[in-house]
Image (cartoon, rainbow, N blue to C red; front, side, top):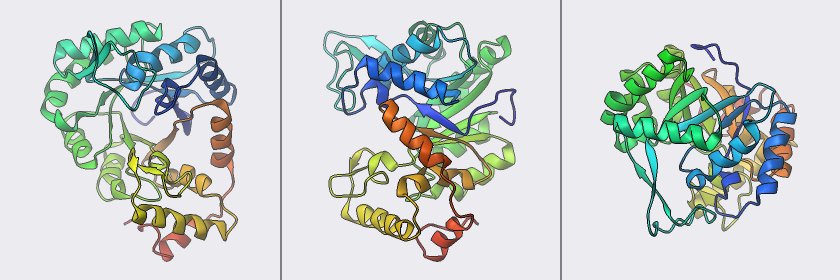
Length: 315
């Protein structure tokens, strides 16, 4: 990373899927997934209390807390997990505890509580990177409450880097302009279907030496398999989105390039981007993503896509 002495791999593992995002995942599958990532040289793992309502952190910590090889661990603050008699239904995480309710809490006390409870679930005594999570509706609190707590943690050596994890470019820029971030995880805003991050966010991050991790490179599914019934931004994809994805896929297929490989490699064309976060559900998916990520693409493929008006040019 540019600002802090932390080395992260260019391909990283996001752990919402192993917590049962949309579909139950057996613990044996999540164990093997994490072990496979480590064996393949991935050292950067992202999680959050929200994912499975604590399940992602528990499953990740179950493996990482006992390994000896170095790794970089990233989790998030901004929500706390409250025990209730009956939580609101959660279609995204069918395996979530029905008595755990995640709620936003950007108070200083809430940030400390979130962080400390993450340490417990992960079974570790420190976390490398702490991100303020989904702060688009809590920008003043993120700036004035959460950041000072995290900055104090950083001074104490409890964390090494501070960032944000967010899906909205405007909100990310507002926070980035007010506090001294080391990293920003941006989901879905720099993909083959959506290059909005390159308009202002990525140039500003490059200027400020803020590392960018890009998540959601398949836009929640449509770029992995663009057909009716596919999802875009976690909702059913429109006919227009599916057609756009199919057109990109057909263009690439004519050149012998899998759509998934281009989707995984695309974000690294921008110099602000340090890592691509892949959210695999099992080890088979991860190994497929690694193969796509390592596939050598023609050096001019992005220019070809620009010339065909299938992606926007970098200004």
